[in-house]
Amino acid sequence: MKKLIGFILVLCLSGLADAANGDAPGGKVVSIKSDDVNIFGILYDESNNKEKKKPALIFLHGWAPQNVRAGERGTYTAKKFSKSGYISLAVTMRGWPDTGGYNLCGWKQPQDISRVVDWLKHQKGVDPERIGIVGHSQGGQVALLTAATNPSVKSVVAYYPVTDIALWAEATDLPKEAIEGYINGVCAYKASQKTRSPVFKAKEIQANVLLLHGDDDKRVPIKHSEIMLKALLDSDKDASLHRVKNGHHGAYGKVWEGSEQRVLDYLKKNL
Image (cartoon, rainbow, N blue to C red):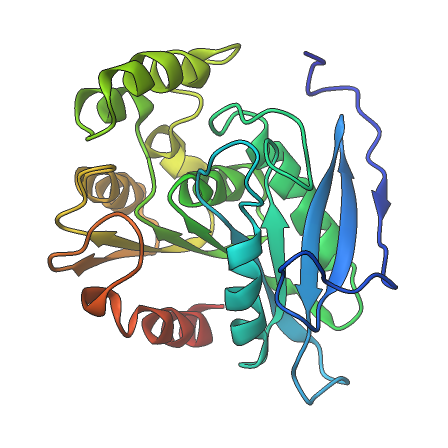
């Protein structure tokens, strides 16, 4: 693999292409160059106020099978948040169509998303001082790691993130072959599990952080958010954890009702 240094950053926007392929309508396709891939995203600006600069949000999906368009679901959330006054960008991370490349368990993705942040700062209507990231599961992991990489990230909302890869290998409902092949295989390839673990990057995170985690999550136990919260607070960071009673992995079901409004309230105050 190419080293992550010595690259030339080239950014491009395809503002004439409308969202398609099942993505929420009304958005514009964007393509953002990051090393060996072009990050695919759908950009939404549904606010009636087109003059005032607005805060911007990047939405990151969780893990999905390799050939699934993992970012598609996030376009609907991005569009919904855009109606609340945000310029919203639903991104497909490295490893999934239509971005391509390989999913390396949070290794190169933070650098990719950091470049997305830098691109978004320069878009028309965006307040460059008010950029946040909302991520689910692996997207939450990448959001936290990106915030440790790029100080322009002012807020992070991480739903049930993996924060310590080694801890994940010890407690998860994933089958043994997935633990050995993915967690102890892919997640240790080229870079260490520790490098991919946000809990060890807490001191470098300048953003305020909201963690949301179900207390009955067997895929990524709530301990991941608990240790992340402690690491952030021990580093004098602005962080909080919302525990969802009886919540599982994935923000679905009655127990998660109201979580989007909680996030909107949080961002209104903190971004």
